Amino acid sequence: MLTPMSERAPRPDWVRRINVMADAVGGAEHLVSLDVEELVRLAKSITNLSDFGDFDGDWRGRLDAMVEAIEGEANLSVIGRLQTRQEILRCLQTRLFMTKKLADDPAILDEKIEAPIIVTGQARSGTSILFELLALDPDARSIAAWEATNPVPQIEDISRLMERTECEQEFWSDIQPEYAMVHENRSDLPVECITAMMPSFASFQWWIESFLPSWMPDFVAALQFHTVYLKILQYQQPKRTWVLKTPVYLPVLDLVFQFFPDAWILLTHRDPLKTLPSGMSTLASVRWQRSDTVDLERLTEGAATSYDLMVHVKQRRDAGDFPDRIADVHFVDQVRDPVAGIRAAYGKMGRSFGDVHAKRIRAYLDEKPKGKFGSHEYDPEDWGFSRAEIREKTRAYLEAYGVEREDGD
Image 1 (cartoon, helix red, strand yellow):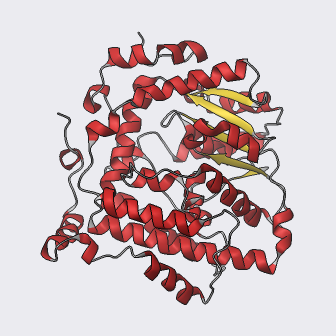
Image 2 (cartoon, rainbow, N blue to C red):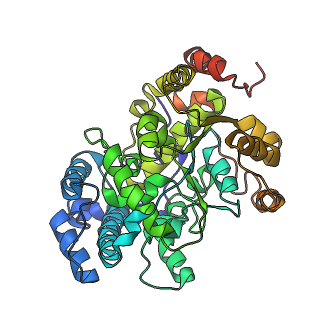
């Protein structure tokens, strides 16, 4: 029996009390509605717009199916429903603003997303810190959290936009203080593509946030939306290389290359003894934000099999099934010398690495020491794994990529 989340991360009193309000009225759904028709009407009324766009297919059908799954399976708390309602309403408004922007200036769609650098790999394998360091390149750009939620800003004051974004970034650690040790959310930090993809109602982000076994993201629709989103942000701006990231790209690399044929994929690697329990801890923490029922046993079932996918990717690379535009980046190398690690990755991509970028990396890491919010503990045994089991089930992955073990064995 795994230790429940209620003991791992006890609720702050204010969160517990708000959630308990539901008991007095027969359920959280009576306090915070997720009615799609109501939210669609609200979005239209607030924005005075009515066209949600069709550049990614049947968005309404996906939204209806997603909310049906949330209502039937996610068991959201009052706080969880409030977060989800805000996200849905914000995403509907984003679609309206994007569609209006495209109607006003159709030339946006003529933009080309050229040779983006895309970071992917197993969750917790160093994708986030690599992503943040790459985004410091003066000749590159990423998606800041405030941009992910405001691709078509309705106000010019960026500081106000960042304050508005706090509810979907810093607020997470208010709800669950332990989350700050797992991952740093901040309005000015670069965010994963799946966050920007949320208005497609096809993004994997919705699945991460809530337990939705009957609902699956639509990767094609999500990437269709994302391409348009990037073009809007890029339009009439200085030309810089996009730096994008999400571990979710790993199982759909064929699709990624279909949408971005000249992309460079930076594939991160780390010892599964570290990534597996850390990944489970992170997913459980995210789900615990919104629900009092997080089934840890179910969460960890089959987790180690994802490393078989990494082996399959290596086999396909060796067979020439993917473009020769995938470079491996090992976490231990990044830790030993981050500047040298980035320089090596740039060398593989044939991209120049300048002194300004190197200085920015050193300064950034000086201001962001490891463990600044405390230590994220994630022993394998705490999450239902044994070290021997992980070693056996991920042996082929370690050998295929020459991943260095971090326990010294």
